[in-house]
Length: 454
Image 1: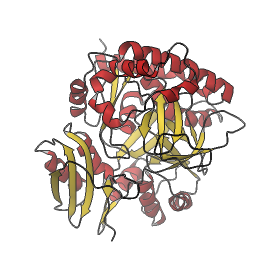
Image 2: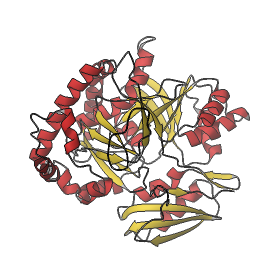
Image 3: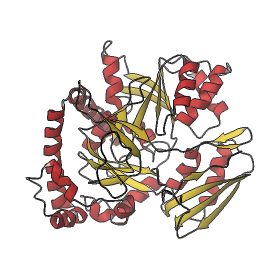
Image 4: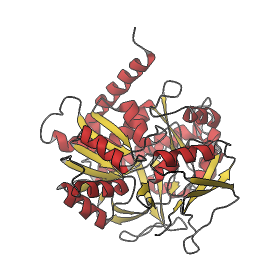
């Protein structure tokens, strides 16, 4: 008799394969077709939220909107929602009354390197975002399929243009999050094997160990954080990294022009980028191209200034507002993300938004010969339910962490263990519970990781 896990995996894989043809078609929708889809999906989303989410029902009622007749231009009448508001009102935001914050937190707390579905149907993700405030996001299986294909479909389309998928699908190695509370690991754990065979190497490992693992199992497609790819480029140039991937793609952090050039030269292929959020928005660039194409069929994206007013095309936004059109379990409607973008003219071949992306400027913490990736620290913090917001400051022999919330007594030990695993000998970790974080006087933003300049 098949186990519950194998039955669930088979169902997830079948749903992913069944949805792929439509997702491939969506990539080429023109602007009119895209707007038609957004309007219909928005009406369905608001109708569902008005009926099943107390948090959104009040906001929709106070905005005077009729969900069945709403137009895209009417969305601006809705108030924005922040991560702080969403987490504080979590039980009223979600549309399944069994799905409380406590239940979801407990599920995340029990998650290791492999993800499982909560209640046999929900994928649960944690994110620190660019602000450092912990967020939690839940996707029912159908929504998780859209989430996964939003990330995969461009790569699948490029492969299918040259012939059928190889056995096992796309073959990739991803140097990214090691914990399945993060999207990069959770989606591979739950949905890998249907359209792709992806192995994951934690970015928190010392670079020598990452190099050793890559050499032991050379990938054809290499994906990773730009900060890690830059180190791997150094390893490749020095002759220690022996792999010859046909594609290199960066994700989760900004890819600077300098790093793009360095990585491309080292590996001999143009480097592409992927933009992804735990909130459900994705974007990709073609190899060697800095322009992202966002998944406009999956989310409405508003580029706004600090007062939530639309900015003209060609002007850098202060933040973006996203309305996730497919997650009915945890509706995110005009949800604020602090990433900065510039909207570019539409392409002739499709109607999806084209942007350049700014922000997400995590940096490596360097301690003499040891470089510690922020994910080594972030994973330990995100696994702690009592941490609401945090700020990490690099010290000469370790880190100091200011925490808003009620962290458990074991957090310092977890952080120390994470730093040791990343290669730092005898690190010193100090914690302080604070009421607010230090912020840039010019922008009002709090840097999540404050890196010491050598």
